[in-house]
Length: 70
Image (tube, rainbow, N blue to C red; front, side, top):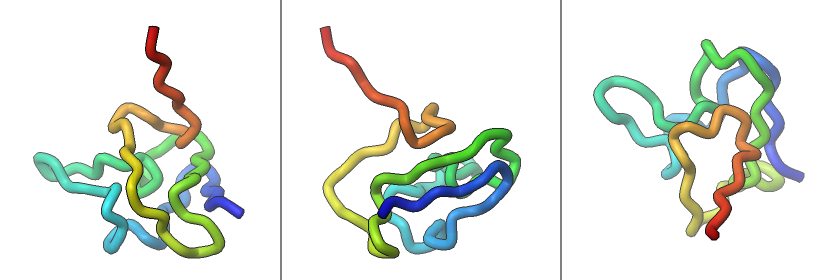
């Protein structure tokens, strides 16, 4: 089961998650932002454990953004 955060909820893994990196004082992962105005689903956390080897797009506000290659 992946991690589901409701609007305004902050990820409990934000301080240890390798996908939440700091850049110029702000979080890259939207799951770590309290000002997020939508739900966030993180497939990188399954059953409370962080899965390694993925990448997070800093513009992905929902955790559901897919990158399409043409």
